[in-house]
Image (cartoon, rainbow, N blue to C red):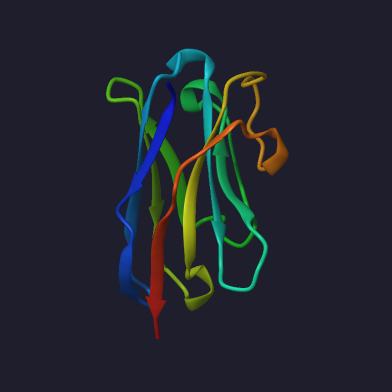
Length: 126
């Protein structure tokens, strides 16, 4: 049974940093790939960052490019989202997502994700 469990959310001031973690289980790690999405109150869910299998290729939402970094610990099977220079517009629930096929590229297309975590709340206070 596959599972994605996010952690690391919280409240931070503008300009601060947070690192989100997504603990994964049940995946054939070398052939799976992972992404982060977010949903702010009253808005649609949007892609934030994604990686290909092994984290070799990455892609980012333009709104976070240069501030957020997706990475993964292949030995611990954990996916991270390092967030720096946080802004009020980054306030949202952040979700970890997984794909189990066609992981030779990274994508932020939601319909291509196979599994989702429950989310972790990030609040940026001004």
